Amino acid sequence: MDKKINKMKTEIKQQNNFYIAVTALCLIALGTDLSGILTSAYSDPHAANFVNGFILGLFIVVEVFVIIKFVKNQKALKDEATLKRLYNEYHDERSQQINAMAGQKSLEATILVAVAAGLIVCYFSLEAFLGMLAVVFVAGATRKFYKVYYNRTYSAE
Image 1 (cartoon, rainbow, N blue to C red):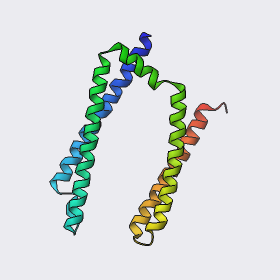
Image 2: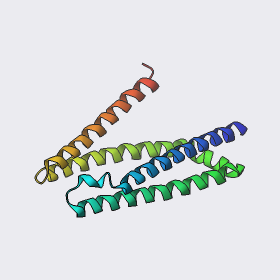
Image 3: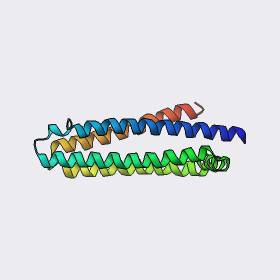
Image 4: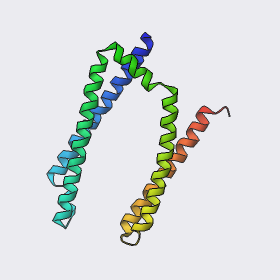
């Protein structure tokens, strides 16, 4: 069981390092947003204020989430029973299969919604349509890449 606990500690430390990196990036992006560099590209002050508020709100929510997860991880590192429970939760094969299936179906649904939104928005804005089209192509290419990668990695061929 010590190997499992050590493995879980390593995973939690990696998560915490990721959270620290996300916090640093968000603070840099927030500083850039508050400096006015991003909103100076907008000629309409209402659009600039909307974008500024959206970015500010987004980064505040991300920071709160990161802080909560970081604190939970720090507490878990000090408690062996919590580490065992987390290890069992993270490495449960049934949960992993459910998450994989949910991820696959949600990606398919997201692509369909993006296609539908692109068909609707194409009548109003070419730029928005091209953005939606790019999202569909990137999501499809990413899915195909990982499908090929995992087939080569885990199949007996």
